[in-house]
Image 1 (cartoon, rainbow, N blue to C red):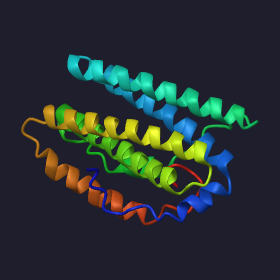
Image 2 (tube, rainbow, N blue to C red; image 1 turned 90 degrees about the horizontal axis):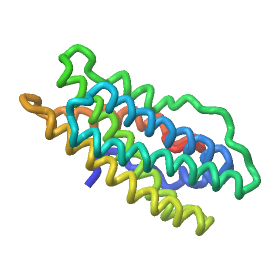
Image 3 (tube, rainbow, N blue to C red; image 1 turned 90 degrees about the vertical axis):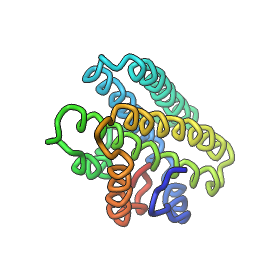
Image 4 (cartoon, rainbow, N blue to C red; image 1 turned 180 degrees about the horizontal axis):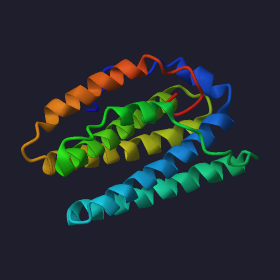
Length: 193
């Protein structure tokens, strides 16, 4: 369904398990950034009523996920650490077309968002299937399902609002680009690292 070209090596979970606190903090901030991304899309594209309504639901879910991760951190006796830079997302951002006009920018922003959700979904699946902590396994399985829904929403709106743009061709380009940059990831205890 996701079409990702490079799967996460399940051994990445061993790195994650060596520092659960780090991935939880990173994960919390990923959820906050996802909510901010949804709000930014709304602010810049208020004329698309159907998309605004769908994104409002995603924003609420992302904020709820942030709260869930924060609660999990507190239950484990930790505190939310400072926000982390997400090198993966920053590298994806470089691939966005910035010179094709407003419609092309919207489509690329939606595909950028779909890509992040797709990789997060895939990472949460790997965590849910390989992490030893069964509570975390269930937690990540539930979030995996949510991320898959977000992915389909973003890619669906890219297709809906991409009149005159070969959205499927552009999505294939995103998939190829993402596979190349993913060769450098999977070595850190972060959601995308």
